[in-house]
Structure formats: C-alpha cells, structure tokens
Image (tube, rainbow over the protein chains, first blue to last red):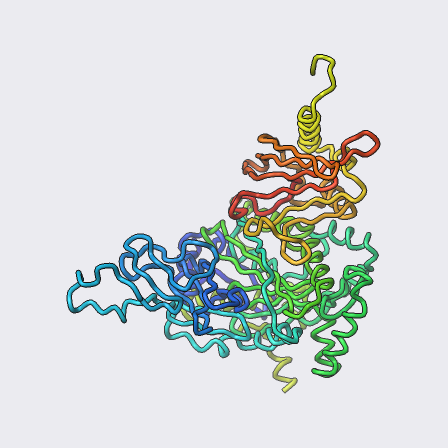
Length: 435
Length: 163
C-alpha cells in the first residue's frame, strides 16, 4: 500500500485533490478504518419507531458487532451487545420479535427486557462472590439519540452526539420537521451486498455529477410519465455544502416532486390537494423561506461516516458496512411521517421503487458503477482517483466538494489528526467574508 | 407431447410456465410481456417481509403494465448498466401446486434462477405465485409474484433481471 501519509494529495493552490486507490483495496487501510473510524465515531443503529411497544426488539450488526435493541417494559429503548454475560452465546436469535424475558438457550440464563439478569438455574452452585446484579446484559459504551435516530459508539470518550453531528443537525431537523407527529420506518428493508469498497458508496450517494449520465434510463422512464426533466440540467447547480466533521449534503431542485411537499405527476391527481395542504401547513409553521427549503429542495445527507439520508421523491435511510476492502453490506429503509395518509404513502413507496432499491431503475446502475470502479483498480497502473472538480470555484452540487469533505475527515481520522477542516479553502474564505 | 387426448390442466399449466421461463432465458422480453393481461402485475417482496403489501410496506418490485414495459425497455437498452452486457440466466421450475379460484388458475411453484455475468454466478431461489386467466382461449398472467427465500441479496447486489 501507499504510505499512509500519502493516501490523499490535497493541494488547493495547485487545484489538486487525489485519492490513492489503495485506500479502496488495502486490508491494512480497512483495519485502520475499523480502529480509527468505526471504533471511534458515532454510528447509526436504528430509528426509535422500529421498536414501538414494550418488549419489541430487533437485532442488527454495527461495524461487525452483533447488537440488539429492545424497548423495556418501562418504555425505554435500550441497546445491548448481543452476547450472554455467562459464556457468550447470542441472546437475541431472531431478527425481530417481542419478549418480556430473553433466555439464553445454552444454560437458560434469563434476562428481562431491561437487561437485568433475572434467572440463573441452580444459582446456589456459584460461590459467594457471584453477583447476579452485575451480570446484566452489557450495552455498548455510548448510546444517544437525536430526534428518533439512535446512534451507538464503541468509544467511551466520544463527544456527545449533538456536538458530533455539527452542521448535519440542521438538515436532520429539516427532514424530521416535515412530519407533524414524528417519522417512522416503514416495514420491509432492502438488504444487499456490493462488491466494492464502502467509501465508493459514500462518494456515489453524494455525487450529483453522475446522475445524468448513469441514470439515463430512469429519466427516460420519468419523462414518459409526463415529468419534465429538462430541469435536471440545472437542478444540480445549487451550492455544495460541507457540514463539518466529515458530514456533507448535496442539495438539488426537487423537480421530480416530493411527498412533502411538491406535487408532480409521480404523486397522482389523488394527492394534489393533500400535498398542497401539507405545504401550506409548513409555511404557517416555519415561514415561507424555511418551508421552501424543506418542501421544494431535495437532498442527500451524509452523516459521517456511513449514514445516508436521501430526502427526495421518498426518504431513504441507508447504512453500509465494510466486510472486506472490496465488499460491503447495505441496508436501506423508507422513512415516512407517522400521520401520512394511505394514498400518499402508497405513492411515496411507489416512487421509491422507481429509483431506489435492488429492483429500482437507478440503484442497480449505481451498484454496477462502483463495482466497475473496484474491478478497474485491479489494473493497478493508475494509482490515483481524481476528485478536484469545482475546487477552483464556489462548488455546486455537481462538483466533488462533498466528496472531498468526507475524504478530508477520513484522512484526519486515519492519520490520527482527529477533527480537521473539511471545506475547500475557497469556500472557507467566502464563509469568512460572509461573516 | 401426448396421445391425442386433451391435455390435463397440469400439463397445460406446466407447459405455460416452461414456455415463460424459456422466453425469459432467451431474453425474448417483448414476447414475455405479451403473456400478461392488460391489468397484469409483477411483484417481488423484500427478503425480510415476504408478505409485504406494496401499498403500505416496502417491496423490491411492484410493476403495473406501464412500469413493466419500462422495465423491459430498460433491460433492452445499452444504458441499463447492470444488465449491459446482459447476463445469462437459466430457470428451473418445480413443485407445482395448482388450484382453481373463481375461474382463475392459481399456481404455486418453486424456482431456481441462476444468473451468470462477469465471471460470477449467483442463484435466486424462491417461490412463484401465478394467477392465470383465460383470455380468448389463451392463458394470460394477471398476477405474478416472486418470493425470495434468500435472507439477504448477499451475492446479487440487485434484482436486475426479471425473476
């Protein structure tokens, strides 16, 4: 692999930003990512709505570690490492379910849904030093949530979640505030693998530049339904935004429509009035300017390192984990307001299917594109990937500033520098002038 | 094929499903589309919710005939990148259970669809539910559901072919 210090060439004066391709192929890099990113950062686990009632639970792997989350009889959501405190067997062996008590099948130790060890067969067989109260299920070192999004960290010293989220907070608010009574995850998830490095999906998810060439067939389909996609030419000319700590957002004009709240033929005549009413409600609540930002603009938000929220013709929540330098697991869900009317929900879900997901008209081509990059790296002769687009100007969504922001923080973590400035210097200067 | 006597319902249905599979394996997709009724539907639920209802749950695919035509156009296009160049496929269908409901023929079967592309092979395994109608003396598909047994699309990355 390339020398760790030289994985990125970042020279704004010369207009150079390159990533060494060993960042996508090296096992040593993956190991460092595990140690210095996935063991240090806040990581997305779940949405609170996924366990609605006391006793509801789900299991999920985070950075390769088996966890489960369960709503206790006291109504509180807790997260546990999925391992018996006795000898290690998995406690939660269903992907989801409901339980007052979880019993380890190996020696029948029982834990209540708040994690307390409540049953040990033949407990008298243990010496006096055995302390049942201290043998409850163990949570990850840190668990915090922000407006329904639950994160864990395996780093006990990590800063609080709100500080970590930095500028991404405002964008999470912009998404959550679209709902009157809170958001929920819709049943059914997309789980698939991609034979590519996980960072290529970060890049792809924030990259406005590929949308028109890669997704030609999608736009042809949308066109055939009566949506004028001529605006796609300019939809991606909005300013690119860097949100600190590696977070970034790519915003574009929501010309294909949005369930909240910009009607287009994709949402059907039956929802025209409803969408107008939702929009009017947002204007009343938040004022015209903020309502416009919420309702008319679409966005792909990266919460560093690996949570993407795509708030567009639907709201996709996507998280992905590396299994090897050239392999990742992806899970995606749909987020929708709890109060959403059935007709609008049906259209939202229908729109998801046209673009997103393994059977959509666009996501499979993204999968193909990044797998193709990974395959191309085997040629080896070309050492660097080029990511300087828009570095000389006030970058727009179609530029690569958001990608550079991710890469700068990634490099900050990997090299041990910690938090770093992730914006292009030209953007920093502008921000300073604006102040 | 037989001794001159009229084919049984089972023979008719088996022959229909085998023909359908042959059209898909040969990428004769326009002919395959012609097997559907005008109100035809093609559904693939997610791996974690096999009974998913597309109106309120997330599914992988829920095509009416407009979208199914668009899907076929996409599969035939050189800009449908996941299937350009096209994969090779081979379908095996077995374990047919046939019942008649309100004059329609409802067929449950098992499928194994192999997909080969770029040096890789990955099977899709699951069950089909076909609801067949007689239209002008010919069998047509009104509803076609493919339920995957896979827990995760681990080797596949997508459902880019028609299952």
